[in-house]
Amino acid sequence: MARLGSWIESHPEGIYVRPADAWIDPSEAKAKAMITHGHSDHARGGHGAVLATPETLAIMEVRCGPQSGQPIAYGENIRVGDVDVSFMPAGHVLGSAQIVLEHNGEKVVVSGDYKRRPDPTCACFVPVPCDIFITEATFGLPVFRHPETGGEIDRLLHRLHADPSRCVLVGAYALGKAQRIITELRSRGHDQAIYFHGAIERLNQLYESFGVELGELRPATGATKKDMAGHVVIAPPGALNDRWSRRLPDPVTAMASGWMRIRQRARQRNVELPLIISDHADWDELTMTIRELEPTEVWITHGREEALKHWCMTHQIKACELNLVGYEDEDD
Ligand SMILES: [Zn+2]
Ligand SMILES: [Zn+2]
Image 1 (cartoon, rainbow, N blue to C red):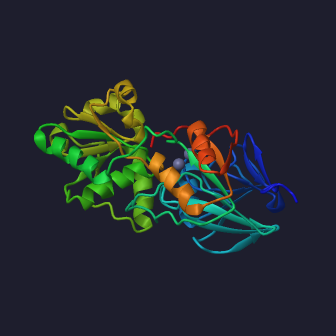
Image 2 (tube, rainbow, N blue to C red):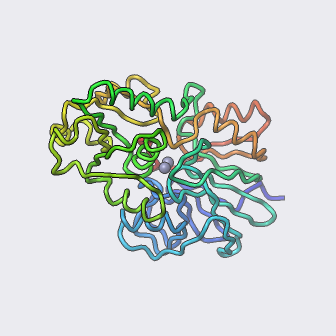
Image 3 (cartoon, rainbow, N blue to C red):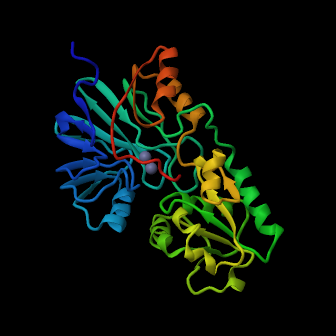
């Protein structure tokens, strides 16, 4: 009998599903691509045909221009070549999906990026038991344990209220994290206007068009220091230390990222208020998910693979690393 999953090939530029003649999240333009989610290291432009959720396709159109896309709703079953394919929620950002592949009686789940804790801006991760689970491992070390999100948001609000003459500038990845911070603030009762950097405006609008309510938002462009005093301002991480932030009233610089667990990373970006809020599974979520799915094999795509591989082996699960290139440590 052939090796488990022998119909799935790992290449440096992505995962190739041979009987479907299709690639998953390829880092180069391909004739047919199945895309897990809209982050730029997974969703590149230039593919001949794109299979993705309607939300991911809309995000790709905002970021990479028109797509010859085929929208696949969560849970819809389609046939691609000789493979049964469906997209299931991954809980990472709006539209993010795990790709479920069935061929020759074997079931393979490609997680894409995922997390297990609730996120008001996207559908929750749905566990799909499988023979092979192909997982990310961005935070695949036991040191990475993300705290409760509500507590981090409360620390942000505490700093905001401590000095109404200042603003709190939150660096947040433009796709997903920025909108999540806004909705988490709303769910903690913060109903004041939130100012935003121009780079996240179109994604805010896109989220709202898919029914994610963000409350009153105002562009920071054109606002005065006086307007913004006592308010939260959201900007992409790259704007934290550039000229743009000089327009703000004595900002308390915050950043929302799983990497804020590492003090050195916070210091590098001159972050005064590190908020440990991630859209990736932490160590406990990764291991809990593998326990729950009970796969025969785990293949690890990107991140810190070694520790997770070791954990799998001590739990009698066969594990290996796929040497894919082009996936970055996202700022989230
Ligand atoms: Zn991502
Ligand atoms: Zn990623």
